[in-house]
Length: 330
Image 1: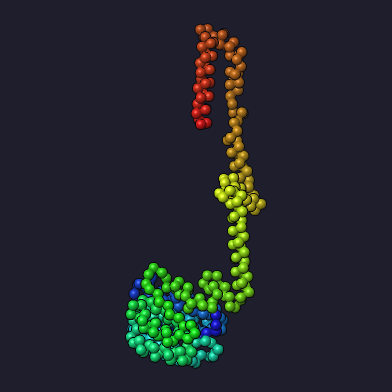
Image 2: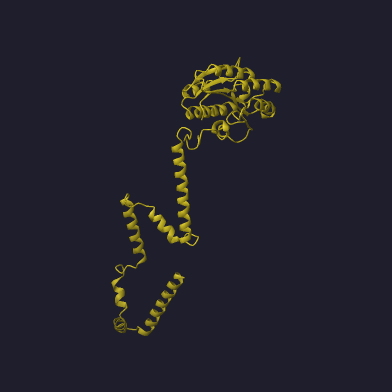
């Protein structure tokens, strides 16, 4: 971002108590001011920022031009709500403060928050815009809150103050959105600042690093896309259960977690034991009843017992057990 001297003008009128911007216009403005000041100071270490109030008894400079972000944010938090906004006087004081900046290489800029009705007429604003343009002062305006009453006036002011698209007019209607998020996506913050707010990489101060990171991200996306297509071709367009199981197993590094490897081995061993029938738990007497000769001699020695009848009953019981097992398998 270019080397700039920026004066941020806050609307601290009574209208800022309204709650159409959560939690209030004043609090939403404070968050946006913090974002803008941080963007200006981080984009160029030699840029300076100041804070002004636009309402009260008279507009005043709360923090003079400085490169220390803590002073700027502290001054923004101390703004008191009172009175009505005086837009014209604020612009004139801000222009005078920028004219006396120490570093004449800094490009002068004013960022004004307008959240209450303007008392100036359209003609007065046009004359003010022409004087600012003559002195090469860029002006960014955040129009929110009273957009119905102020939009026509501010558009006329913007058309006369804008020079080579250096100034900006951002109109934000009330709604569920956050004011600072809308400003973050606008040229007021985004212009010339690379990907500030998302990747926190300043492409202007370190273009090689920004380009290297961009190429790295693009190569990584292409690699992931190639792997995804290769898996789909191997699985015939749809992942199978076996493939899903294998992929879940390969995601685990057993060398780094030996306890997990041991637990998995025990679990697999338990599953095999549940599947295979255990011969050790069988009753030894059951083997004797499988010996037909032993069974017949025992039954014949018992008085009043018909061996053939018992044999038929046993066969019927075995048949019922087999039928029951077949039904369970189905």
